[in-house]
Image (cartoon, rainbow, N blue to C red; front, side, top):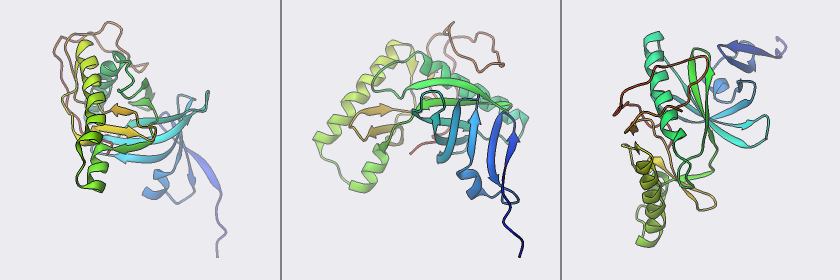
Length: 219
């Protein structure tokens, strides 16, 4: 019987992934230890969709919990499209600082792509709550919809239209705070000269009323 082999670091683009030798399976990737930008430690996959994955992890500098949305592209053409979509979401979220909008931290390079870093929120989506309870009374729904309306009003005041509001994109945290998530299809009503970019990628200023399309990764 062959002895069990140790672990090594496998580098992929800008990531460093620790996994057992010869055991590169989907399960191993789901719990891989990934480090982005020498700061953001990705630990386990908590959501996935057609565009990529959402990881739970931690900030190596502060120890706080984070969620990171990473890209999965089949080829270079798709990677360019996804990079534009992710940076568009970053631009939308960079305009918003509201207690009922998910806290966006930054966009960082991830190999030839981009990853988006958020503050981690522990809780349930409205979609999950509906599935569990089947029917919800007016009072708990009101406690959810009022903060959602406030978040969307704040977004509109800052020139951002969400365009993908659904139960899967509303998170109710363990402490009861409601967060609106996933601005991947948001429309920016005017260009922002201070929009973020994931260095070393740079984009020229884009025209007003830009729009992009993606899919929900959470919920």
